[in-house]
Structure formats: structure tokens, C-alpha cells
Image 1 (cartoon, rainbow, N blue to C red):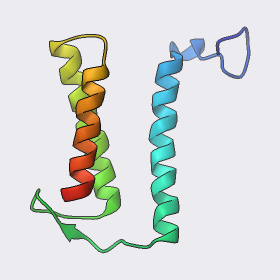
Image 2 (cartoon, rainbow, N blue to C red):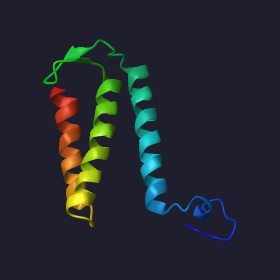
Image 3 (tube, helix red, strand yellow):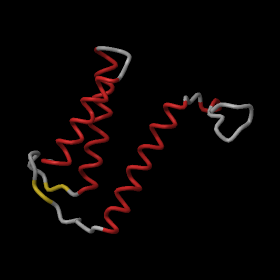
Length: 100
């Protein structure tokens, strides 16, 4: 994906393709939530296990923020590879969206 002056040349920001894929995932998640909310409005808050009234967007934010801390903790204690952190983050996302 890196080329001399190509559209996917991310070297000017010292990005790797994994970093670009991460940000594409974040923006894609936000776009998917917007489309979901447009076609199936469900903005009424619900009270979950956190004791807060949360909407879908709140739960997405809590999932992304929590996943960030999970990956940082994984890097601090175990280093690479990050498959364990990914598994924990996916479990965290399931818990937040199901019961959060």
C-alpha cells in the first residue's frame, strides 16, 4: 500500500497500513451507527448495568474508549501480538451493547 507518491503513501505521517485500517474502522463504525439510527430510530436512553441512561452512541463511545484502554494495558503487560487484547475488546463491546 505504500508507493512513491501514491494515494496510499502513508509515510508522510509515519503510519502503517494497520494504523490506517484502525482509523477506517473507527470512522466506519460511526457511519454505520448513523445509518442504523436513520433507518431504525431508537434514541431513547436505557438504563443498563452501569447505572447510566445510555443511547447507542453513548455505548459506542464507551466501547471505543474502553477498547483503547484494554489495548494499552495489553501492550503494557504482554506486548505483541495483540490478539488477546482484541478478544477482550470484542467481549467488552458485546457486554456494553447488550447490557450497558
